Length: 201
Image (cartoon, rainbow, N blue to C red; front, side, top):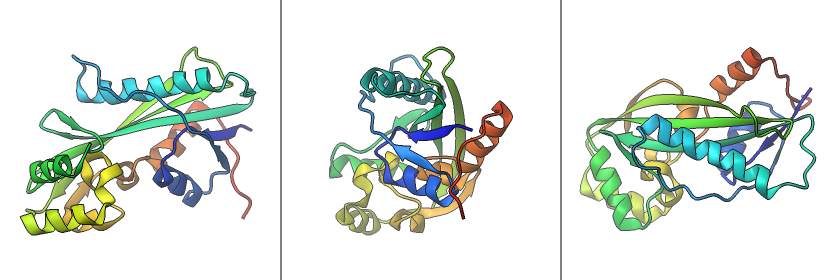
């Protein structure tokens, strides 16, 4: 039975794991999220997730990780091969939402697992969900930016928040768009044969 560690400051990932019944601890990890050139969108997101896993090991050398599984992750919005992370400022958030208006984009999340504190063979899962947006008016965009919600969200919107009004349809994991594909994580752990602690109901 493994203990689960979520290496992320994201309250959304924490909430998703809590709702799914996982018993876990949270440790933050700091790493550059600059996108490597010449990588396609899926590989770029996977690369950042793996870098977070390696950075966690470096930053928590004194932590006993035997019997523990560390989960790191990265989520990006991809529109016509352009990756949209968290907007740097309100102006960029406006640009992001204008570019997503009336079209279909993908949300890609990479999750990496570190087993027993070993940097050898870090395992990574990539999940992709298609999201179709309604046509957005300039007023809708400006009103949403004014709430402040988009500023720490990939693609400048939160599907679990006010951004849900923009979404016409989704194909694939909804929780992936929030930032952590819970169903896929559950199935992946089962396939790999790792049993992790759950909260007692």
